[in-house]
Image 1 (cartoon, rainbow, N blue to C red):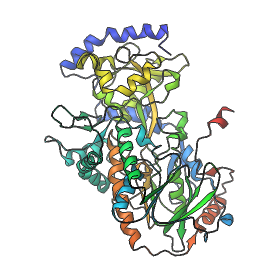
Image 2 (cartoon, rainbow, N blue to C red; image 1 turned 120 degrees about the vertical axis):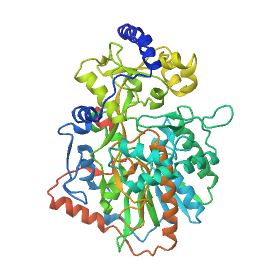
Image 3 (tube, rainbow, N blue to C red; image 1 turned 90 degrees about the vertical axis):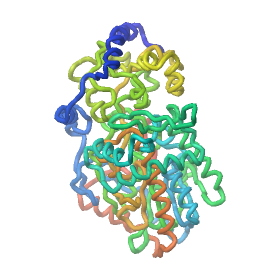
Image 4 (cartoon, helix red, strand yellow; image 1 turned 45 degrees about the horizontal axis):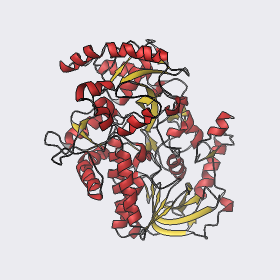
Length: 541
């Protein structure tokens, strides 16, 4: 639906300040800039990570005593779906070298590289191949491949953005291999934005010191996923894909090494046993847990399955107390609530302003700072805008892009967003968008090393399911980079490992041991996990 009359009246206040704001930009001024002390203060007071009562200590497992979101604790302190008495470990349905759980960007990249290393590969994915957060990523992928940039500068930006909690070896790999990753994607057929001479265009991202964001309009993730998925299909003789069959438990061998998984067909309920010499978890994040009731940008299947499976198998988790809330999630129209408005919009000139048209925060602060400033403006300063359904938000003044870059710029740079809003009678080249922070990314995850190995032998983890790469806050463009760099590393190292892996007898005894831990901790629950799909019908009922 178009903006109602009361919101159109408020837009006039935004229009009234554009001239002065544009003059400010021309003078190279941005208001206001927060210093280190101001950033720390605004984070601790307003960011959802610091909300009292939103987290608790885990009572079992390798991270016993660690603080995690309540919704994650609920999953980890649940009963397994698998009844070990009903699984015949002699009846193997698929026997492969490398099993990849998850068919998004990380899983597909891993499959391609593993296959190139001469091993048999099976991808088991919960929904369709490509149904993943990769498909929904918009802004771009970082790579320091311009003369005024370097991997060292990319490393430092990422370290600072993660509040200096990143694993040094992981971000070293991320930054050093970024140019190679972009070149590999282009070689596969990804159509990155280029100028008339064929040179890749790059933009500035929040928290970065150089323009290193490579993009494909505002559909970068979709373009990358399209290309990876097509390439996997081109190799259908050596890479098998099973759709609508999520993993509901990992299988170990008698020596504690990962040796496969139990899958469940979502249509028939049938259980399938896969034996594998190496397993890669690439299941993505936890957005559909809707931490603290926040809407999310994540795809339907993002329910933290990988965390549950790896934790029960004996992996540790890191940085699970830090979640990313993207500052610009749509809050109007209601049908689009939670929809991501890429940071590239702000990088192209759009500004964040309050109900009075005042710019209250620099538009390219790191995401956690930007989100905190928006929450403060709405809840504390009472300068947010209220939608017809009672949601609070601020304006993202996208017409500033037209003013600075010329008529038609918004439609050219952001064709998908332009169309999505035009369906509801809102022309974002002429009218601002209403936004508020939305749950976007799982900063933490399973502990891995630079080879993408977990602490469980023969079990690898790549992409959003892993932890340590981004510290406590991810910078724009590093997620698509993460899935390629560590997806490829997982694929290569899993293939190498599978060639000399000696498998023992298959076992599900870790499930029995986990149930015993729940009993000893006095945890009485009828919850089971992994969740597989969010239960919206139950919540409505």
